[in-house]
Image (cartoon, rainbow, N blue to C red; front, side, top):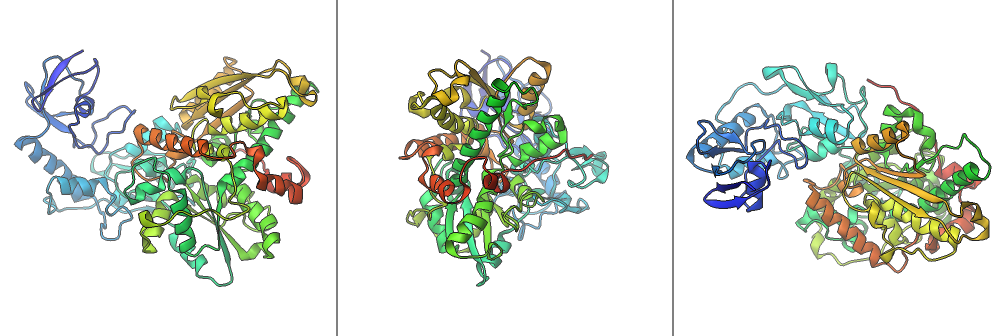
Length: 591
């Protein structure tokens, strides 16, 4: 355990620890711009420089390992002067438009300049060339704001394994973007928005559709309904100064109603519906494989509720598309149900209903405009806002969010169970599916403590579990003794690991859950910045508390979903549910 001194404080750390990590251990803050937790440090921004005794020049704290007896000064005259020079140079190239920039008051460069006492641009000169890439439904790139920190490059290549963004050119002409000056729509970009989530400035952001929602709300001829994803309730409070993991479901519902939405519903309703459809699909495939001996049955069954993951599968592994569940995501199921079943209930035409989604995910913007998503006869979901956009919209409405009273969502599409809440977390879809499938085939209560399946929870990149089916009801006796093998992956680079294990024969699964973003939807590309593992853990814990506080915690016990089948859909995987709630995906070929 090397012992070193940082700003006159002694600290023992493990071998290989960096100066930055050692400083964090004793609550000494060293500023950074390019550094990201869990990723290899590259020292690109030079903001984290420190003075180390025995070294002539400053060293980068993020990439320099500690050594025995090291003496470090994180701030002195030389370091302060050097940091101001580094940030001043970044400001000289950064065409920020701070007064109207989406990241004003949420910009790490702006904040850092203020903390360093920079009051003017010391190095006026040529700005970076502006190229505005608005070619995709989800993301906007503004090259003039980019500071070449390479966070987006690391995230896109390492965390997600997609490779849409790289540093192009050399020297002053270096810029971050797709190869050969292509737009994001030209290349294989899964629209996950993790690049926008880690960008310290406004160089990459979600496509802002707040004004489109205001226009819809002000149209007297439209009936505007809103659905809110389960991950929103554990993160939206951060937009208003609350700690990560503060659950604000009731206040969010009140805010949406006060802003003028005609009905406030919950994507959790169709998350419960997804479990009924997807669980039936899994059991149907198992029956065909084990009883009918159909060798063409595609097992394992992969989840399909994460649009970034679906995009990835279409582009990188089209050979497994038959393994994807045909279920649409809960967002898209909601749109189809709202414009058919609910429209009939309230006597409205589908074209007169506007469905707004509040999602933690930028890829949901892309998903909503896919040509497959119009089985209600019109576009199923009209507009998608991220958590960040909803926070902005509430502020525009002049609402004092933290002072709002709690209220309940509207029926019937606002009724849900705890199983739907945990869709927000990695492992949550698997756990929710198990709660229902186990009880269907055994006729007994789900046996896990507090209904949680511990092996599929947590932030490990790939998790595995198995459940042995015993003592089954006669209808499902063909599954007697079968050990159902499960895998859960979050972050697309981890999804690749699971697929490659399957292809090599190293692993055999029956059900695989993939969430595109690290931590699942609670770490989505549209959530409040900056999402560290500590923040993910706080949001995950909040979602589990929400689930545990529910009276109903299993999707098949949702009375509104039961009524939907009785009145309208008739049965899971039935003719109407197949038309409205299911789809198929196809291979995509891009650069």
